[in-house]
Length: 69
Length: 184
Image 1 (cartoon, rainbow over the protein chains, first blue to last red):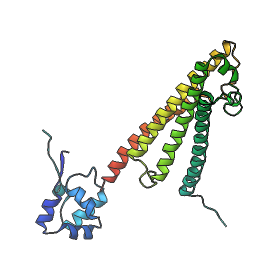
Image 2 (image 1 turned 90 degrees about the vertical axis):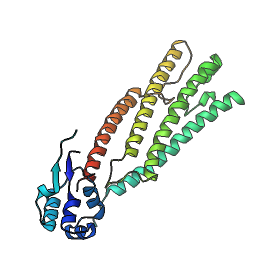
Image 3 (image 1 turned 135 degrees about the vertical axis):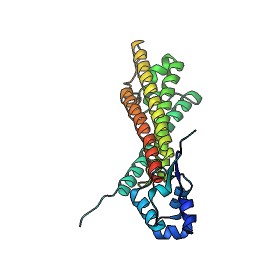
Image 4 (image 1 turned 120 degrees about the vertical axis):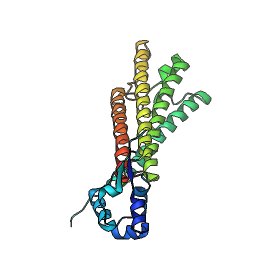
């Protein structure tokens, strides 16, 4: 998929573990893992809002478009 | 007191009904197989009441081959009907039917199998019924195709088409459900 989720990069910048993020955004570890590994098909605005709030970042910091070869 | 009928209750009732119909169809198939085997292996005493009053004694006297073919048509149709209900019962027993996650590849496979079996029943009923009509035209006293359970081929065909469409819808349902599961 040409949309890359940079959740792991932002988590590393904020020095936050997956467990901590999971508790703060109220998402299960498995769902966050799906998002982190890029297996997710879609993301709800409410989820994006919660993650941006906790990681203090913009949606553009989490999502990136890369042209497929 | 208000009685609430939930989906679970409806499914339980359908399961009981499926079991009753399955047992009935097994008895039908078993009886016809037994009657055919007994007629050929022991003696033809039950050809005048082959299945639910269907008199095939004239056919048996005329030609054993035709008698065998008619019995085989009846056996194939009865066994196919029994297999359909076996597949439906299997859905209930394996707990494949889930209200929270209704669209599964197992459900689609079962619907497709039932559709193919229904198409088979339609085919055998149609040709069986035609065969009975042809035998009647040969001056052989034949019972009505309804009595031999070789009827309503068009209805079975119609049902098969509907089931194929439902299988297609379930396929799309599986895709949507998977997409929904992967929406975070």
